[in-house]
Structures are given as C-alpha cells and as structure tokens.
Image 1 (cartoon, rainbow, N blue to C red):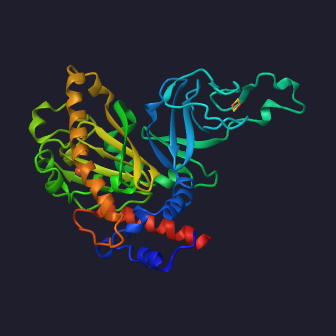
Image 2 (cartoon, rainbow, N blue to C red):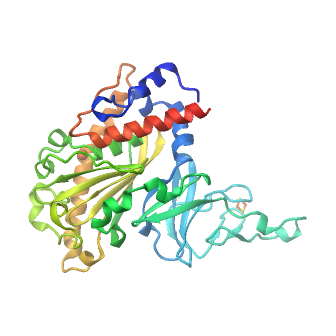
Image 3 (cartoon, helix red, strand yellow):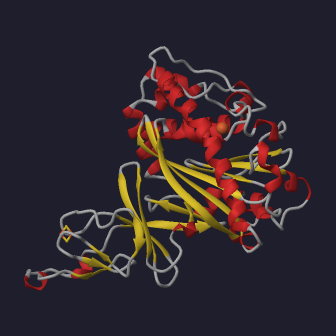
Length: 384
Ligand code: FES
Ligand SMILES: [Fe+2]
C-alpha cells in the first residue's frame, strides 16, 4: 500500500524520544488499508505470540486460531515438538479442524485426507487410482514455531529473524520470575469491539487507573518506575504495589505465596511487559496474567487471557479456591477496561480524531510500542 502523504507525516511525528513523540494517528486503528499493511508488515512477517505453550501440552493436543486472516492449527506432536500448520487441506482446501481438542492425526472432514501431527499426508482414500499422485507431494503448509520462557510463538516468514535475536534481552530481564516454571491454571478467549492495539495499550499504561479502576485496583499501584532500556522487540515497566497487583483492593488478605524466585523489590511489585506486536503480560508477586490479541477487523479483536502460577504454588493447600480470586480480579479489571476501549474505538473513527501526546511518566510502554509500530509501517512502505 503506497502510504498517503498525511499518513506518512503523521507516522513521522511518532518518534523517539518518547518525551516528544505524538500518539499513533487515528487511521491506524480503523482503516482497512492499514490493516492490510499490518498483515503484511507485521503479522505475516514477525514472530507472533500465541499465549502460553502449555495451551497444547499433551501429545495430540491441538488448538485453532486465526492470525490476521490465516487459519492455523497448532498441535503438540508425540515427540513434544510444537507444530503450526496452515489450517487448509491440501486436497480442496477445507478447514481441517476448528476449536481445540486432542487427536492422534489430522483427518479432513470432507474426503478424509489424513495427516500426521507433523503435517505429512499419510492417508488419501482412493487416490491410488490417480495417475502420478504421491502423498509425499502434499504435506500441510507448516510454519516456524518457538517456545521461550513458557510462551509460544509462530512465524509465517521463513526469512524472519531468529527468535532469540527477535526477543533480545527478554529472557534475562524476566529471569527472576522463572516464567518457564509457571503452569497455566486458567485460559479463556473473548472478542472486544476495539482495534487489537488499543487492548494492548490500555494494559500497558498506569494513566487510566484512577479514572477507569477507581474502586477496584487503582490504590494497589504506586507510581511506576521509568520504562526499562531494553534490547529486543519488547517494552517493559516495573512498578511497586501496595499489597499485590494480582488481587482487588478488597481481597488483599487472600494472597497466595510469593513466587519463590523473587528477591528485593521484585517481591513488592509488578512488571508489565509487551512483547511486540501482540502479546502482553504482568509478572506479579505471585503469578502472571497474560493477554494476546489478534485482529478480527480494524474495529474488533480476539483476546486470549491466561493466568499462571509457579508450579510449587499450584501444589499449596487451598490453591484452587484462592486462584479463583485472582481470576475474578482479572475479569473485574478487564470488565472495567472494555467499555472504555469500545467507546475509544468509536471516538477514533471520527473524521475529526487527531494525534495526541503521551504522558511520559505513565504511558512510556505505549509510546515505545507506537514508535516500533510506526517504524514497521514506514519500513514496509519504503520497501514497496
Ligand atoms: S478437502 Fe480435505 S479431503 Fe477433500
Ligand atoms: Fe485497565
């Protein structure tokens, strides 16, 4: 998409340093042309977060998802490898699976072409009478996968950067939380009538807390540190809390044990991290809460929400009951954010919506993402 002059000029204003950067222009939250540019420049090009790797844990566990218009199956093979396949049969294109579940092989519901979990075609009824047909010529189209610190990623571009180059200092920054050793105890998915970016933005800023969460979580959060200087495609900001960020103000006496790996200030605060482009989480005192978003349309996104705790914590007395209180808190906060996000989306569709400015102390991660995003769209355009 050749970029219009006004859009190019708007993206130029989204620049480091954050202190003088403009917000992203409203068009990027509503235009189908820009959504197409995002698909090509971001979703089919970079590593995309798909939540926690244990969403498909046992051999044969599978889940289906749609990454910017590409239906995908993720599946755990018997040898433990995570595979991601284009969810489209090599015969005449039918979806192989929907929803999630467990299977020994992937059988197309249309004419029963059958694939191993690693994507090889192993059965094709009656095709032995078809001249020149070789099953080995028709494996599923597969994509790269990676698992780091318990998170799972897919990349549709074989020429993309190595995942460890992409993530840079991510693992070392989060080592104190031992995220690899966490287990998911809750996952749900839902849709929100907002752009995929705004859902991630609101999760990564403290500015809205007194206005959107005045009686639920605002008083838990102290003024945060500055965002960290990082190498890699993520942004992160730590802030101390009064009690735990994982619980509502009224339920602070229900806290689970502190993550055993944490020391010093990390025991008394929450690290909010956004792995570009689409996955974010809070590494809290006891556990983590994680969201990944994927675009449905420019005005709508699908969100996956996961809660994890260190394995040791899940084995403590009363864990099941107490962990429910954390899940309640996550839903309570999101239920306060969603009406705000949906009315923000309506405001962003106004022809008179304009670029704004960031609050340097309270929105640095949102500003960092905006700079990263503007670069992706600019660079893709420069390459046309
Ligand atoms: S479309 Fe899958 S077997 Fe025919
Ligand atoms: Fe919020």
